[in-house]
Image (tube, rainbow, N blue to C red; front, side, top):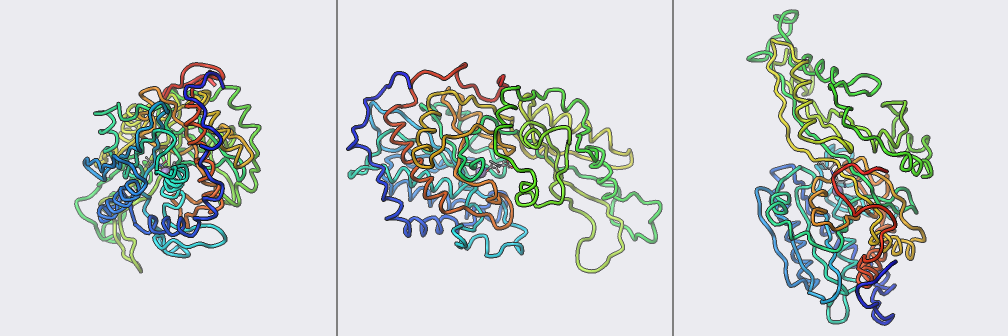
Length: 488
Ligand code: BES
Ligand code: MN
């Protein structure tokens, strides 16, 4: 580390008491179970009041933790929870981000125990949101609690921002930060919504993919028709839709949207080399994580390149026609598919949206009404991890877990990340999940060992950051830049 802004905390001021977790485990587990029991599914309007309950749960918790400012900030959708810890003069400010909303739990019949009835099995807590992201938000709150002194004072300034629309593409937090960018002013932002690279290998993320989520609708008839009477002449909406979808990607995994790959900035040699050093066993990845018989996609590229550095096109669901019990002989008049593209550095959401619209229009037969509705999206992000704050994070992980973070990328997206870094603060993307936590899948879980060590890691981080403030000299390179391509 280079220069240090604040005087170091004396050893006696180090408050992260190693016994906190051991002593408080039963209470902490019960609190997390309460939080996870709230079905805060942001995409489903029927759960709007549950999302609010989760926000209220956070409000109560942050108030209990002694934050003098705790607000629910309203927008079009689910509220943003904003809180400020007590002001601590001459100490740095950390912005903590997370989300309290979760993905829909379906297919519900595949859960061994109900998604909102959190259950411990084999040291893991099963519930929707256990890892993504309520369990990780909880981890940060408890790390904060662990470093409060006897008078409830933290060792540094902490601002909390928790949104309730991360999983559904809501705009409340975007609107808030566009109107009030100063809210994100901090010495660093900490985002705990990711996972370790592998058990025992904590990670920091140097890039997230962007997203372009769309609905493609096809109408071929005014009404459904008898498939015997009209089969052979009447255009079938589902058939038309699947032909369009098939025209968007070939069997080898290449997306056929014209010029889509043109903007893609491939990872640099150094970064590719660093991925080669990561422990990776394709066989067990295939069997245990992907749970398939074969990996698909662009086979000229490594698995890392395919999930971290190349765009994708996925079909999420198709609606239309008859899907009930038994048989109904009908030609569907209407069909809709939900699809999304993941975007990588170099690509822009708005541009890809136009490219998708044009490609679908070109594939649509003249006798069908085909519409593309862009539901939401976000740009990809790249983060430089050479700011001294990352060394502080490394130190915290090393002292608790015994290993510093490895730089990795994520194939997933967190749309608000570019906005969090706009005032120049380094954005630290990390997490305590494990790769097989089953995010967005049935039986999502959080390894409780990860939670307990995570509380200690972030408690340690808060203390170290309070002392060092992330000030110092960079290891190399330019100031952290967000949302643009960085030469690796
Ligand atoms: N926590 C995830 C992002 C993530 C995914 C991190 C995989 C690490 C590995 C996040 O909550 C998420 O799932 N985001 C959505 C955003 C989308 C709905 C805009 C995603 O990536 O699908
Ligand atoms: Mn998440």
